[in-house]
Length: 115
Length: 111
Image (tube, rainbow over the protein chains, first blue to last red):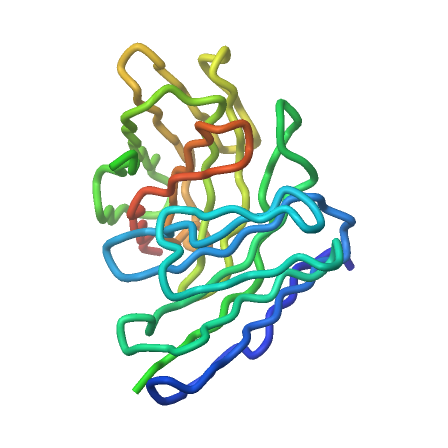
């Protein structure tokens, strides 16, 4: 089944404790992206990657890191989480950028609480 | 901010009625996409309309795009209780690299 998976789905942690949220897709998509969703604000893009070893900042990259060492994986790293990073996080992927059809496929979400 | 805005924020209708949601944006776009989100779950792509298209249909969905007004509308005809969800427009202004999502319209379809 074609899908985007995220782990963990739920996480409660404390300020300053490094964490990683994994994202994996099995559709051989070139493009992957991370979003956070907060009430009343819709989804805001954190980082995106157009292909392996190519990443770039979205609208709200502060406090986050990403890497794209393999095409299928795009982990989101919070080196020192803070309470304002409490949010619902989504990973998404699409076939390609450019003029191609670029429907995004979303993972199920990771609900993160930072105390 | 290049954020899109959906209107209304919330909409409540009876089953069988039509639901119309609007989206406005601020910059030139390559395409505009509509997504649905059931409570707390991942978004599901509904329909994409390119900047050179004016109208598109998919089943009970009809999307229009007016680039001169920088606005789009999503019409769901003959709504069903299962259509209850939040609906988001997403504008692609950088050839599939960057997407801006609006805050969404929360649709409730009452049986």
